[in-house]
Amino acid sequence: MIIILMGPPGAGKGTQGDLLVKKWPTFCKVSTGDLLRDQIKKETEVGLKVKDVIAGGNLVDDDLLFEVLKNFLKEQGDKKILLDGFPRTVNQAKLLDTLNNQYKVAKVVNLSIDTRVLVDRLSGRRICSQCGAIFHVSNFIMNQEQETCPACLSGKLVQRPDDFPDRIKNRLEVYENQTRPVIEYYKQRGICSEVDAMGEKDQVFKRLIETL
Ligand SMILES: [Zn+2]
Image 1 (tube, rainbow, N blue to C red):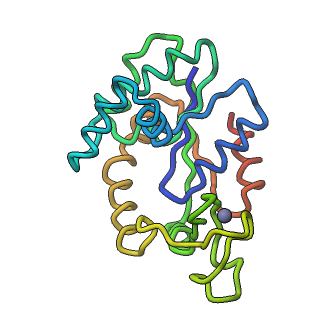
Image 2 (image 1 turned 90 degrees about the vertical axis):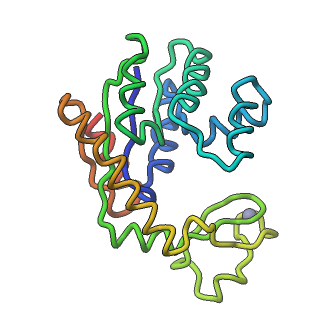
């Protein structure tokens, strides 16, 4: 069984997915970004293919991404799967439908959120250059760029290039054009629910649980 968490960048898919797995340990959370990194690190056959594609300056295409995902699913046996970051396009959603019944998409949850809130969340995000912890500038009064990480007390907090304003705009556009139709694809099937992703993460999580 597969459950899919959807929503624009900054809606909190990663955070909500982590909370869900903590509450329901029978779920295994999969982010395709993590999968790709993992396969490259382990230097598997498919991982080396991915490495070649990225080294050539190209994007990993749907078929290769799906191959990575399938390999991972094979290793999971009967575990329930929580997908984060896949499918991002209708084509990917159709690929997912080719899996056998064990991996039927049972439920899709779309975390919906106001664009202005998203831009604020993403542009205010700072990440620790050493431990990877994520913070928001609204939690700091001092000069943010000079801030030392409160988690590891040694790394500096930096802004990822992906979170620069022009990149955010671009990411949201890609989302609207390519991923929004995926939500419609699942709505037509009657398995997609909307969850209001505004507010504190615990409130959002409560709403999320209610829909599952
Ligand atoms: Zn740190």
